[in-house]
Image 1 (cartoon, helix red, strand yellow):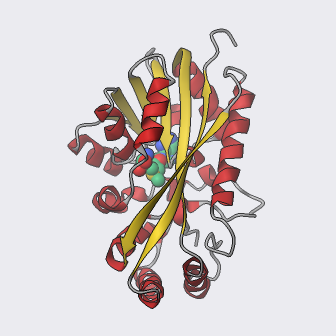
Image 2 (image 1 turned 30 degrees about the vertical axis):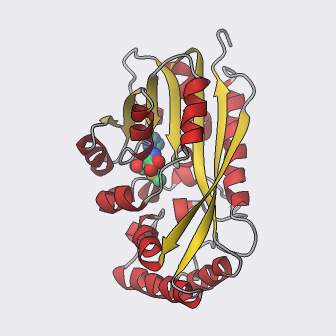
Amino acid sequence: MRAQPEGQPGRDSAANEPHRHRQVAEGFGADAERYDRARPSYPSALVERIVAASPGPGVLDVGCGTGIAARQFQAAGCRVLGIDPDARMADQARQSGVEVEVAAFETWDPAGRAFDVVIAGQAWHWVDPVAGAAKAAQVLHPGGRLAVFWNAFQPPPGLGEAFAEVYRQVLPDSPNLWRAGPILDAYLKMCAKAADGIRQARAFGGPEQWRFGWDRPYTRREWLEQVPTFGGHTQLPPARLEDLLAGIGAAIDAVGGSFTMSYTTVAVTAARLASP
Ligand SMILES: C[S@@+](CC[C@H](N)C(=O)[O-])C[C@H]1O[C@@H](n2cnc3c(N)ncnc32)[C@H](O)[C@@H]1O
């Protein structure tokens, strides 16, 4: 059973190709309402920096999900089209005013349209990084920007280890992201892979990495609300999910019933060359 925040197959898996796990990649919509309610948005400094570094307001949001990032770019004055292969996520996004086409990015037909910015929030690892970068190059205006980003999180010392122990006990066969050490490392591997894909497209300037640090306090209830939205968790047998939530809840109770999660939003970004 592959069940991890964002569904990465662990820090050191040899077969580190989450985009091949289509059941997980397209499983988030099992509870799209909860996803939209529980998942954090992105720092406004990230949105502002992407907008400032782009030649215009036309945004394509790849793997837009329920529209969490799309709405932030709309609020910043952009015109956003979302793409997502999961019709349930797309429906949720439409209800909040985001226009969405249901398709995987690699096979989506842009029908001649071009964009100033291509973004992907928590989604680029579900897209083939080489085919995805080539497709982004195809749909970007010269000078347009590709920006893919993730919210990497780090619980306070001790709590991450306690979460790791719960996963070890409840899902012993699942790769364990919570193991000791910075979780950011797993996200930096995804960033490196995204940067490689961008270089291979041979249509972009050198990829840059941007980082934004922020904190968010969680009560036990708020964190447990988010856990079932993590990659692969919608496919867990209900009893396993219940055990997971009970164990995580007990770990949070043991530190007083609330905690502050440290987030680092990491972005990999590059500008489309005028002539590759
Ligand atoms: C973790 S969610 C992120 C949703 C949203 N961008 C956000 O920031 O909350 C990942 C999304 O990527 C979508 N996805 C999976 N494979 C994809 C692909 N090949 N092309 C485009 N989107 C994909 C999933 O359906 C899901 O909605």
